[in-house]
Image (cartoon, rainbow, N blue to C red; front, side, top):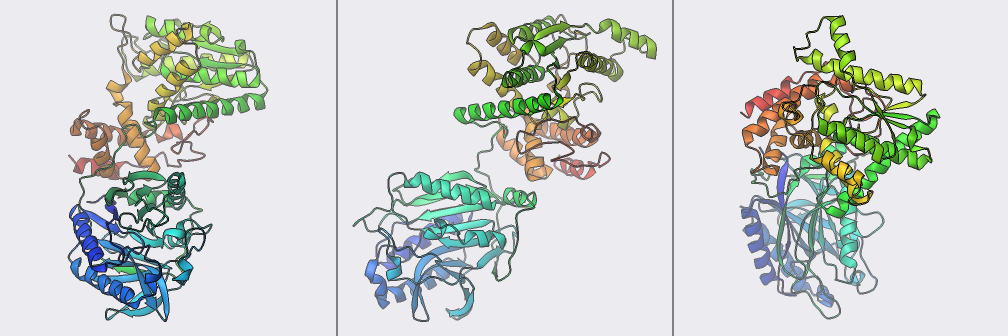
Length: 638
């Protein structure tokens, strides 16, 4: 199975101006090389059969006729390649000359796409030679076949229906209303641009921003192939840029001033998922010509870089910016709720773990934003049967260092009384033993908030909501849940960001936060072993980095288990065996479906990213849905 991946290539040949025979030999050779590497879509530059900078030679019939013969040769010599090839040439029709892109596959020209926007400013003077192409396709005869000629056409692969390609040429990208808007609405999820753009200081960055924006707005892949080596350097230089973008993200970039092939493995499933999830994305293919072709997409040994932590940017600067933005969203949301209620008190249960630490930090930021006395933040530590000295000491030190009010309320005696009331043996460490403690703590938080006319700030995170790793009506409940949109892998970076950039280095607060970061994730509901945490969450439900990976690709793109497993094995190669990934993938699906009832009645909380589980916003799923289909596919992979 291809899993909706296809390999594409942007190619800059080393041309000779006006030497069509040389140029087509280069095009054929590079096409064979790219197709042999598994590329299914090959994109060459604008007017590459003749060269872009031929000037008044475009008035010469000998050149125009040679270009047409060259195109016929390309068709014949690439007939056995499993690819669709886009090449540029000057094309004469009804007494006018057009700057055109030819789509070639299986020995035939599928269609000719003329350039829509003809530049005639600065160093460009294309209107001297070329006419504007018409949008509506008309049939023309070429090499004994009837083919469409016009801008409004797409090319659809019958072997891979998600592969729908449309072409535009250079200046078409730079205008206010580019053709790719119509192409995308007609179903194209790959836009190819055959280009010949000169190099100027700062122009490359602007070009990349344009392509990124087009790709992001259209939920598409965008392949850009620029002319370069061999073009005239009389008054300007063409750098031969090659870019492949997907949904706004740069996948591959060729080296400027260096001809060659730039490849990337495009995930068309990601493009289609974005379109499916956006009901404002309009599909209207009226007036478009759809050209079918048949290119078998081979199974690829993917070359994509798959990030292990898709919620966390790899770049240090970007990660810091993201963390600061998320902290601001969380604090702003809580500040808005506090202001609306009219309270000056917020109650937070502090365990000495990551989630409650982040919730307290956010609460402090909200109080600072509102100009409220931080003494109105009641940080409550509630030691129970599993509390260790380390987490207890950190909880107390954290509340004091942040200027909040510390309140200690041990729960052992009250829980024992509850055990006595319901006939629970304290030595039986079952789910009742654990959940009784969580619910007792929640009762204390709620009652203290009632006493002080305050609000209980929830601490649970997105990953726990996905796995149902919360006690129903225990830590599952609050009056405002600030971490509800933050996955566990990101919680750590938010706390670290605050520790490194908001705290004075070497301070008591900085030291406590760093120790919290080093503490194993645990609900601490079972008695410690020799003073150490005995109940480690990731040993019970699996590594959070794996579950966050599964969650991201399931919710963000709707990927099926097989594809998620494939990507996870790539991302975590050398860290987890495949059977380990499969084991926790099975656990993820089982828990995700079984625990929906907890997510169906979540408290309010701010969404901070593209993946969220609020039943009022992003995830509406019946609590009695079955996981059988998903688990069956996981089982088939064993």
